[in-house]
Every structure is written in C-alpha cells, then in structure tokens.
Length: 130
Image (cartoon, rainbow, N blue to C red; front, side, top):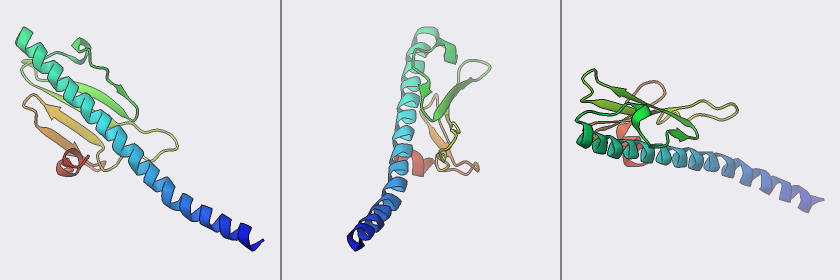
C-alpha cells in the first residue's frame, strides 16, 4: 500500500511540472508559426508591390492566414503604399491565451512589433527569443 501511495505522489508531482511546461511549449510553437506566417505575408507583399506598385489587401494574398491560436489581418494605408500585418491571439475555451505576445505585427519596412495583452511593448521578448 505504501508503494502505491508513493507512486501516486510521484505521478502527481510529475504532472504538476509537466502540464505547465507543455502549455508553454504549445504557446511558443503557435507563436513561431504565427511569426512565420507574418514573414510569408511580408515576402508576398514585397512580390506584389514589385508587380503592381502597391500593396495587396488580405484577399489578394495566397498566404494561408489560418493558424491555431491566432487571427490575422492586414491594414493598408489609404495610398496602398504601406501596410501592417498583424497576428492577434484568439481566445479558446478552456485554454489560457498567450498574454506575453498577444499581438504580433510587421510592416512594409520589415519592422517587427509585439505587445502584451495589456498593450505593453514586448517586441524584444517575443520576436527575438520566440
């Protein structure tokens, strides 16, 4: 009986450590995929601009804008000579959202930005470390 109790305690301790680590890994992986999508949007926008001398709306891009955990958007300037592509954390029932890198963005100059859920700048923490 003592061995079974010891085994149960060990399993609870392992689960208490493993579950948060798994969630952190999952958030980091989703964040990296969202960043790759934003970089793909940037590359596609550069090609489009080379052909049309303006940036494309999101409907004019072929890049797949569906990634688990994020919603994407492209805001173009009125003159169509600028854009900001964004990836916003999507809230999912039962899961804690990525509050550290809640909004990722990149503009026509390749400048990368990130903010926390409360709107604080987290660019260095999100883009540089992933």
